[in-house]
Image 1 (cartoon, rainbow, N blue to C red):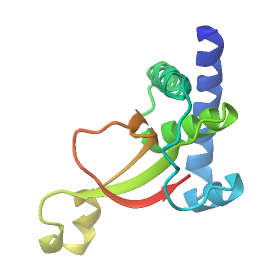
Image 2: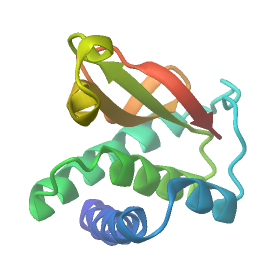
Image 3: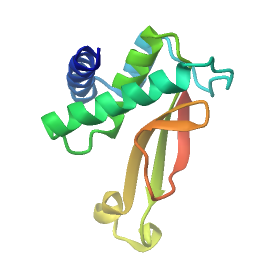
Image 4: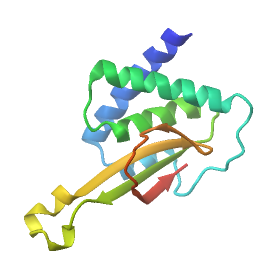
Length: 141
């Protein structure tokens, strides 16, 4: 069972990585039928265990591929996998401004902005745990 879950995670992560590199995120969200907002917290008994197992499988798949900056692909893959299992999740996209972006020359502003995506089921973070706080820009369920 664990091997099958890891194989599914590897396929989903690879597909999500290709999608995020070739298609705009908003197009992916619309195609998947995601709507802006937060999923309800009403999780069933084993949903958190399933979500944690999927998160571990996605982390293992990312270690296999060694993708850098893969937080969005990981969150999308996790959302796909957990949707197949009927687990309600919320995908968040956030940003963090480092240093003094307001004082930076226009050509260097992007060096001060950090984007991040993470996936939650209920109150548990499944993918994209980050130690730095990010301001939520959008959320999809």
